[in-house]
Image (cartoon, rainbow, N blue to C red):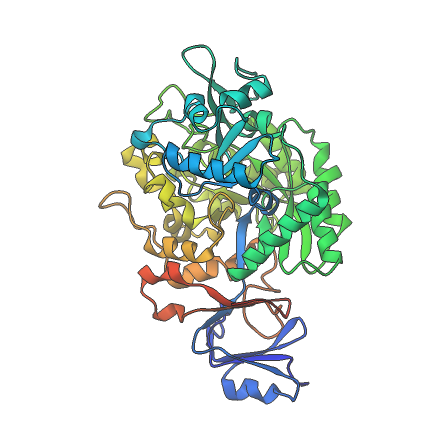
Length: 536
């Protein structure tokens, strides 16, 4: 065998390979792994030009695969007012004023990543609150999950919606008792009435922000992403970077379908993207849909009314038969279907569609997905294994500080069904396949927060079944199991001979840390496609 280009020794190698779970060293040649094993064996491939790296007894693991990521949304979000973790009107005003000073040219101000509990005692923001922050320039503050936003009077007037607006099902310009808009906007169709008025960035600005976002991902050890939005225009941006050899990450890409689109877009857009361009770093092959909103704003589609808002149980964005027709057609085209479904009714409707596709087209290795699965009815638990549906989960969602351990989220749910919330381990024990991701920019892309939240998960009430994940299952959820989710388990997600050379060296030996220390991990070296793309 010819000499290796790069060898890493003295490492605690977590391979994710069941046939060789641990190793001491690894050798790379070009874009592939050529040896994994004992240091003495791997060093036989050392040559005069081989680059040597000392792993310093730290964990070397497969490159992290984030299985739920919004690259374009998140990249553009980097240009907004950053409000993650900000509480109180004074603190928001401070951030808004600083942004105005730095960007005096902005005619509409947009804040991002705001928590639902920004005011004490679960008080809801109104336009009057935002008028105190900024009375003159149109201002919109978008919630961290992108499913809610709040606007000042100037923004509502600019959009012509101060007196209300007709919006599609499951979206709303919320009205106050005085007959005027309260300032709260629920779901994309309502929020976009204002955000669509903002000038679109130039292609150069878009490319710069995308490259910045990818660099940030590399700095966390992330080497692959499953994108959750997509169309031809966005795909063309990534294609341009990929063809310029300026794309240090792998991206699995969907076409995003909306409820007013005809069935023909499945072939004309989703299949077109799959067939039009494919490279080792960029590929399409999925259809993405939203079945509901989120529980926090009562737009999650539930089987029973909300405990703290019994007038509603949310609505499905797609009707029962409408989604079945979509699922049958997309499955027939060989596409993977991935659906945002949070409420138990949304999850059931999605599973019904997948079942209809299987009955119509025959059983195949479809690996259709459901994203989030925040509230699952027990009757639907066995259907994941039966239908081969992947549970795509985001550990950091269930305990992010903005939710104050899920409040006001838990106020929406009946206590006798708390065990059905974020049911990671229940799904795993049922035989479902799990994959983990972040949902950036809804939450931080830092995967080590996800590690910590998965391992340290506590029941919402004493006596409920534990949902915490073992450390090994957590790591597999971000590597081998995530690779399986995109039909790439024979190419990546494990450190073994012949696999793609994607890996990350961590700051510590992860198996020697206490669970409380996991969130303080960092990446010190990230390799994608055999190239060092980040080094601390």
